[in-house]
Amino acid sequence: MFGQLFQPMHLLLVVVIALFVFGPGKLPQLGASIGKSIRELRKGLDGTPDQPAQPTQPTQSSDTRK
Image (cartoon, rainbow, N blue to C red; front, side, top):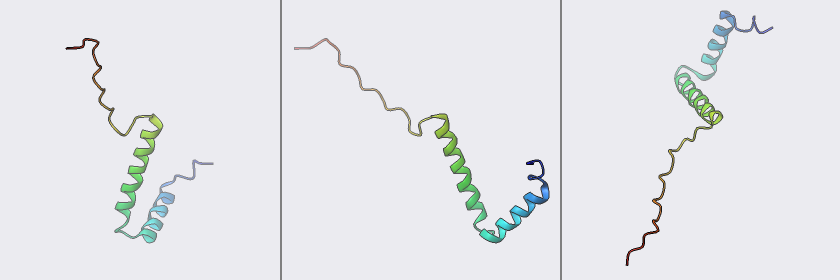
């Protein structure tokens, strides 16, 4: 069923329709935003935090000075 879906003529037709709908100026921006969204989705699925780990607070020693 899906073997006939990804033929070169079908993909070319989708690209031509996208070119007519979005125009040549918007396609690079559209591709970049889709790529960024996919990267963020993969990061979210992997569970990697997007912010670096917070530095740990130094522990207070039990040695008190007078």
